[in-house]
Amino acid sequence: MKKDSGKNKKELRYVNTRRYIIVIAALSFLLLTVNIMFRVSAVFAHTYSTTVYTATVKVFGTVFSIFPFSVIEILIYAAAITVIYCLVRLVISFIQSRKLKVWNFFTYRLKKYLLNLACIILVCLLILSLNCTILYHKLTFCVCANIKPQSHTTEELAALCELLIDEVNEISKEIRTDENGIFTLEGVDLNSTAIDAMLALRTEYPFMPSYYPRPKPIALSKVMSYTNMTGFYSPYTIEANYNKDITDMEIPYTICHELAHMGGFIHEDEANFIAYLACMRSDSAAFRYSGSVNALIPVLNACYDNCGRERYSEIISKLNRQTIADLNFQSAYWERFESKIGEITSGMNDAYIKLNGDSEGEKRYGMVTDLLLDYFDDILSN
Image (cartoon, rainbow, N blue to C red; front, side, top):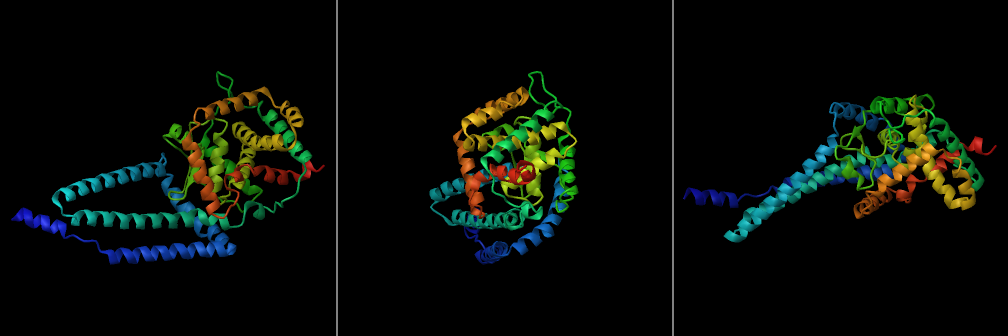
């Protein structure tokens, strides 16, 4: 009798759907309102990003900086385990309910899981909107820095290419190499050097943030490479995460790129441009080399596409052997990770960028060339 009574109690459990509906409706309304406001008003988006968002970065950035590991990475693994656990429980409940021909508890569990999932998704979307999506609609770095877009000729593009090559050649004399003759970051304190480089921008650009939390390496970085990702900014834990397995030449530039996102500049071309500016203001030759080489790469690609092969061959012949070796090493690294996963991830990232109103999608990364042309306009036009 006691066992039957317990079973009946179990079968008669129900979900308080009304409470869930109220929470879901409130979250949906808040999410919709916030998104409408910052899409309609750039003033609202910019004011929010320079006040509330900046305070959020300082508070949560300080809290999560206590942990030496990437908190968002742990949360991703925890979420994956939780999803698997819930699916297993659902399958077990389904099998038991089918065997007993009593579906009450299975439908209870399924309904509760789905309603909880809806609430979690809405909360995640709200955090994403407030700590990331809204940044797409604030004033851009170029507007704040009064860098005006100009029209440029292919000859100016070639001149920019030569300027950056001269820069790279000069810095390459100061860098350290490993036993194989490849650039190394040995002896460089990535955290403090990256933060100092970003803070140095405030001398020329006082609107830049005065605080950056320390960047975090991803533990499973080699796995991350299969997604073609060098780093990412987490709006949920206010962390700048980077792939520590990539070539040393990419790491400083990547870290500054992600810190630029955290600083409120979410467009990929601007984050690349800010990363270049920050690296070039660093006391570390390693950072300057990383910034200069990674700025040169998209400019070389643009030169190849627009200046003709003969002109391109003439320009690239001026690049020093050290950097050519480093670029070949970088290419060899990424060839090892070519896969469908990378294509899928790139497609998802492209769709996400376009969903936020940026029609260029992933092309935006390479558009740093336009910003560099505008930045060096006075020099190139002479």
